[in-house]
Image 1 (cartoon, rainbow, N blue to C red):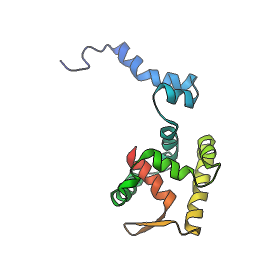
Image 2 (cartoon, rainbow, N blue to C red):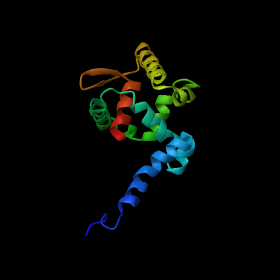
Image 3 (cartoon, rainbow, N blue to C red):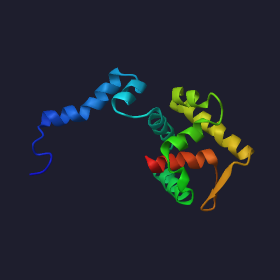
Image 4 (cartoon, helix red, strand yellow):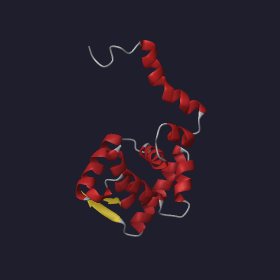
Length: 139
């Protein structure tokens, strides 16, 4: 007998559908509170969705975190990505996926213009870019 044998189909369906039903009726911030997610967790999930290949992003992020283990902290990464401008966090939290990509592209361009780059296995990437990849590796 395993842990799921006493679970009825109806109970399983309720258990699986409860979070999605909540997301339909509750705003994201309230849902986060109900499910014990922080605003950093939600923003991290939104930021990682911009990747077309999360698998590649995770690989780059893992390599970066191997070299910079002090960055392996989700809230710290989100704060560093979102703090480049005074209003950046609010912009990132409220942006559509298209707007989010544009905001992040602006941050990447600024990083390169200001010399905020990091070499990861021969690839020269912006700080924002490697931190986004690190988020993907942590999630």
